[in-house]
Length: 408
Ligand code: GLV
Ligand code: MN
Ligand code: MN
Image: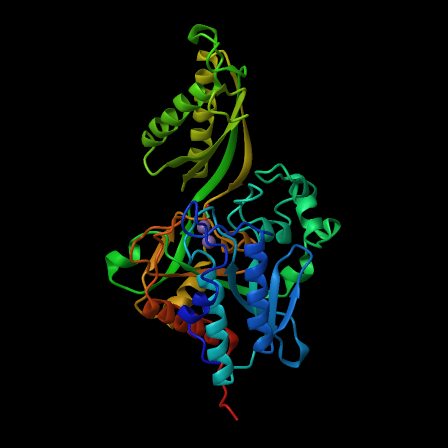
């Protein structure tokens, strides 16, 4: 197989392109994401890998010598995206996995079974909970809760899954699938400028910043924009505006904290209508989990105050929270031997590797992103760096799989 990472990514460049937002919108179980899954399955079939989808919608492509599906070296990533995201967040890891597997096959690397895993809804951009597939697989998220999650159109995961031919009752912890994993290595585009500043193409991951999402609901009184005098209003949009400013002020006061309001939904959302309700989502991150939760409490208090000032009410609920993750130190050190000189970098972004790490020794590789931008169309990777990433992944997988044997 002579596929390159850039060539593979070029094949999917039109899937999920978003002419309105720019970039790509590939929400889980959308036509675009289902098309990407088909693309992956076709490539896995072409390579003679044994493909199946598990009870939580994780796609697995196995190289299982002598029918062994245990203690596997697993790599992979995700194919869903944020709204208007870049081309590399997720697909780079999947395409690199295919190219790395080609290299191992060409070298006749046997030894341990190996697999590529593609995790659904890593971004949580449709149903609100990030790393939904790996959380379900590991039991970190109860299936009853997952099935009731709603997308921005109000459809539950159970409804959307059923419409796509899935079986909601199958969702849930999967100790068998998890137990087959011996080690997991996820390759990902870097989502910052660490490698640019160091002048290096590939890094090893050290940790993931703790992070979570909270939904704030502000409720007031819907009314007419022309007939309601200013003194008579209970406008939750004004409370939302004050809260957005407060979130920035509060986060700036905590060294190392990051807090973002990236999504806000007024109901009913008419130009000449005073909203009756505004939902907004706050993403809060800090390496010290206690400080993250303390900051969220300050945001809750600010929401209640901003609401009260407008005669409105506020509630804040947690949608997901992931504590700070330090990757397995022994595995990280092993990777440093396999990739001498590769810098070791932390990331502020969440990943399935962070969820899996609680159950399976896990590691990450990052590939240089010349713009440093991510979750936006300007995310970038040079073709040579993409190949360097895939070759680094191949070296890591080869090392983990055991000694190479000569091609017969
Ligand atoms: C996922 O990329 C996240 O960090 O939210
Ligand atoms: Mn992402
Ligand atoms: Mn990602």
